[in-house]
Length: 115
Image (cartoon, rainbow, N blue to C red; front, side):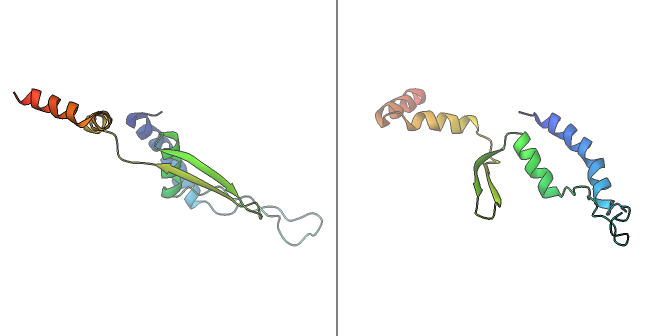
């Protein structure tokens, strides 16, 4: 996964492209040779919104993981991402370990520390 410093570097590399894509419009395409009048459909550069950037960084940084991918009859895909912004602390790890221990062992350990 990426460290916070690496994510900051990645964001700085992406920023110039975001402003470039947001300011761009449709590229003027030549007219259709068979019809002569109307221009061909042109491809537009993808626009990355802040939400899209955060999703990309969340997946690359390991904060978000793909939970499921669903396809319906109309071939519409839905991708469900799951993750938590909360980082597990040392206290959380200790409480997870204590949770699996019998109560009397925990109480003895606490009382042993007090004395």
